[in-house]
Image 1 (cartoon, rainbow, N blue to C red):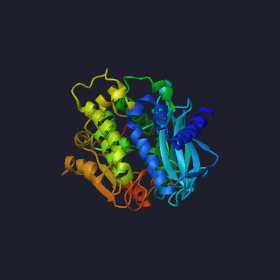
Image 2 (image 1 turned 90 degrees about the vertical axis):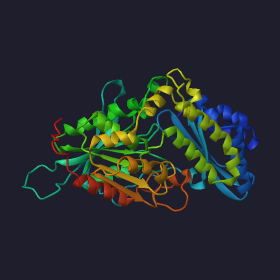
Image 3 (image 1 turned 180 degrees about the vertical axis):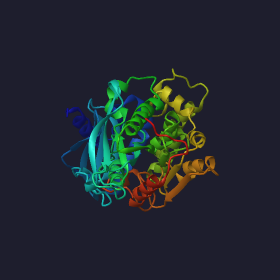
Image 4 (image 1 turned 30 degrees about the horizontal axis):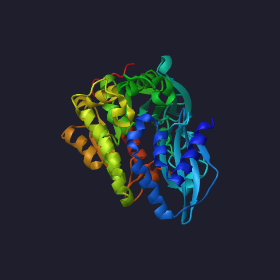
Length: 445
């Protein structure tokens, strides 16, 4: 790793202690600066000092990879009345992309991922695969069950298995959807493969090829998901151990929103599983999320208004008839190009799902603040009302990652090591194993 991220991380903490918040703002990537007003930075640090007291000492920094070209620098800080971790997300070039205050435990080295209790590595094998072709191909992992689902004649091959392709949420995720110390998609893949379901998960193109896409002004949601999702479906349909008529697509968060579009592009997809798929427009969901986080801390509420106003202004631009491919990314949320927002604005996930006529399993966490029961699941329910083959389940204790908990959900609860709710894994496995292909589906690859 280069020294630039470490220098940036330690510099940010010194600037916080010196009250030089405008300089911190200027270290952020240009497209992110409107989202981090000086007032919000100052209010956040002041709230920390009010709660914990002055800084007494700073420990040795810890750096961890956060995807290609990105690092999280974690600095353990001892205040007079407690310990916390200042976490600074930085590119290899030293450009700031995130700043958080986390529990003290976050400064400890990340422990190796441990399998959940519901996963049995003796029940499946894994192999590396390549998804897609050409310069934007991505690596993936195929988890294939070993044992037959029912007694067979000696020497008979196991399977054929139902199969599911996993689609991660927004942002440059790896195939495990790694978040902090946790790997919810690895939990899910191992849990399903232990129950007789083949699983294919893969790194997103934005994770594997960030430099090639960094300057792509015409990049769209379709570019982000469809080519590799369809290629993964085809890979399964050609596999001799897979029941080609029972290849499903499972998407989480934005992956769940996009899942109906994948099935529309590849009609031989047998059905969909949507985990916390949003139906509210993404730009307005972002505004709602920031409001929720501000509501959790009264000391931050007023200062967050500047961030909320900036994001609201950018969201209105997406809805504006004046939005065009030439609209500067700096005027749009998170600096994402206009082509992406134009594509997403023209896509209706619920109407697309309703037109498919395929079985669907919709799962939602009751404590999820990123995709909510009221704002998003309500959209699925309204648009799919009366349609057969649609199953909806809500897990009251679960957050956006389907980790069980209590109280209002926040990003801090994603940090401790934990696993996907076992009830979710069991329900998905049961539904996939019992759902039959639509009449007339031949599954031929």
